[in-house]
Image (cartoon, rainbow, N blue to C red):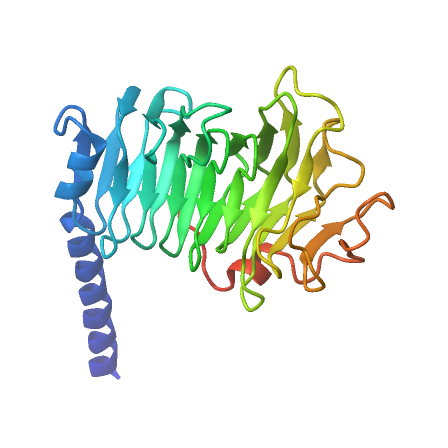
Length: 291
């Protein structure tokens, strides 16, 4: 009995040593005191490192490459640290897995007539966003095929046309979704394959900037037949059209859904009678996002 207890104690001690060693190996890389650009810090980082970005505006595209996993990219505050770019480039592209982005703004300044210009694109699985503002106009936030994303209730996403889109899976919990264009436009455009869960908005607030016309904006249009977007217990401003959704490629396999669903919504919208199947655990499975 005594030997068993000693072995258990040794195993516990070894586990603690392993955890401490893993923690000690992670490095914090500071921008701009150590690295002049965010990309330089990412290039120098190893998987598991933290990139801490001081207050300021940082111009130029940044990319987390595939294979560089478990990075934490953290700013000094949602409005005080800004990663920005313009037409033809993306402020932050994430191809690594298990990336946490926190306390900053990702911005594309191409403008309301600038065409398709994301501020953020996720390619990797398990990307989480905490207290992040993602702002642009058309195609602001690209949740790309095979990507899995979580945005918490301190996040804001704003744009003009299809500004949350593509074929990945994302759970937006209590986020602010804001229309910027005076004449409105569709907020989302999913292209998820029928075997993949799509863009789920859970208790989100759909708002408008000053000057945006009432009844000018739809919640979604399906980019590819079968794409999924669901709106669960969300709040809607006066800019949202009563019909709710815009016809594009919805076909007979559209997975547009809403709960509760007003009678004025498009006939092909799925009128849910419960939230079953659309909860955080239903969409994200066993993944618990880092925050």
